[in-house]
Length: 488
Image (cartoon, rainbow, N blue to C red; front, top):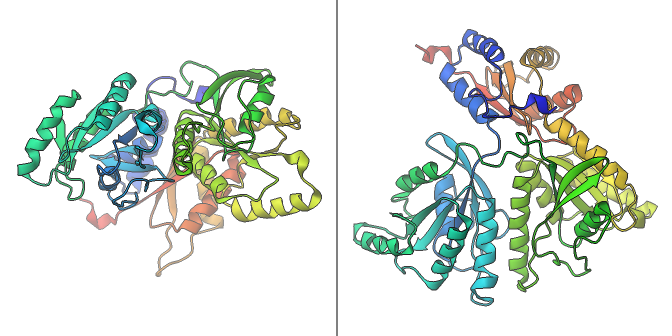
């Protein structure tokens, strides 16, 4: 299905061809939609993975406060002590009409283990996954030795950096910000993340630093091996699985959780094809603080997923599905990756455990019935031959494209046979739609009124029944037509 994906720059109208776009805009004009609004909607939906901005710096300089300011809502946890930022580290933001992802790297107490074991680890992981970096420094304190250590990492990484001099609450503090020119990272942007002062100018600089689209092309143009992120909570058997598919001991395996120190990219022949596997356990053995280890594992897993095309989520089938398992799956879904759930240690399950596992899947993974599933044993190699067909099916669903004409015929059938419930005396209906992008499939529906979440889920379910989309999340955005009386 690669022939359906543009190999160069994406079309300015999402991924629609010129003829299809003209036909679509004619439909839109008949229904009274603003062409400029539709163009921006298609461009947003048709764009691939969003650029990633990492917010780094030592603890208590106001990173999470700044992240909340950037995303426009209080979501990142803020508290006046190190170690608060933990689980969810990625948010979606928009500034001046451009969308991007923000990674809040947080900061737990570093002095316990020293700069090498903590600042370096945290900054490296975040910077590696980012297209640009905001380096936050407390202007009232000035540049510290820890700040200087982060500067060295930033220089090595070679990523664009915007220097944020935080806690500049008024003109009298701007001299403190000017002192940060000494860091050698260019102009310090004086900001008060708490009050919002100066954040607009800083975000303008961020947009200049971020690419319009990420440099990562996921092998589309080069035709390289498909990239598989092997993810899961510690000690579920990721390294054992990688060794089994590689048919040799490529990765250290130990019963102690957290053995893997760095991501291991492996080109592996499997099912007659070459694949690039990444073992993402990602906990450094020298990081002894459990909370730090958890945090780094989460951050590195997120980085690996961002670079992958398919996420193979390994779950220990001998244990109950945990909240951590669900979070990891959610991370992969939100990143828009094709997904395969591999239930490991299947050979150890008795009939009772298999019964309860099925009930747990129905209860805890009800949101992803479309995910590909394989039951495997990394230890014995059982059912490993089923892994490649599952990955290929998920990739095919991830890249499936439905022509606009066929999609609208399908939507017309839905509206006729299952109209939206009447609410407040009105019955909103889908007027027309298009698939604006793939990898994952992204649809834009244009409607006469607000479509309830339940009806959107119904439309998604019918889309899957009609067109497949196995193993891939689907993104559906709805554009509601304004009342004609507002149009000139």
